Length: 113
Image 1 (cartoon, helix red, strand yellow):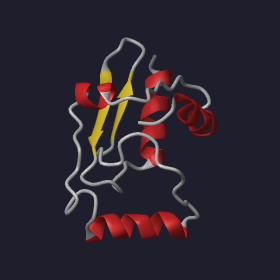
Image 2 (spheres, rainbow, N blue to C red):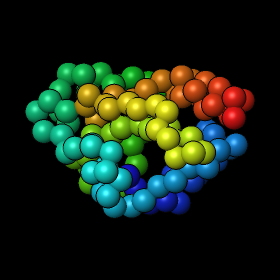
Image 3 (tube, rainbow, N blue to C red):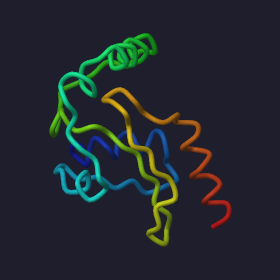
């Protein structure tokens, strides 16, 4: 969740051959069954701290928060027929699927077309 212009900037760098869609409201979150996290657990826990430290060590620093900062992320890949071919519900705010795994899924989907 965030402004579509931010998503397009990252999509262009990470996945220039696919179309990424985004909205700046919570409609998609609710449609895909994503939820707001609890302060203790999904938003502030040892696992969240570890994920934040790992991201920081890799040179990633958070910017200005856009949207609802309590929403727990999820990742979905939808094929050209509109079918969801990959679903990842994050366990906490810092839980994300491996980017190379996502790229492999998209590339296999494109090549099998």
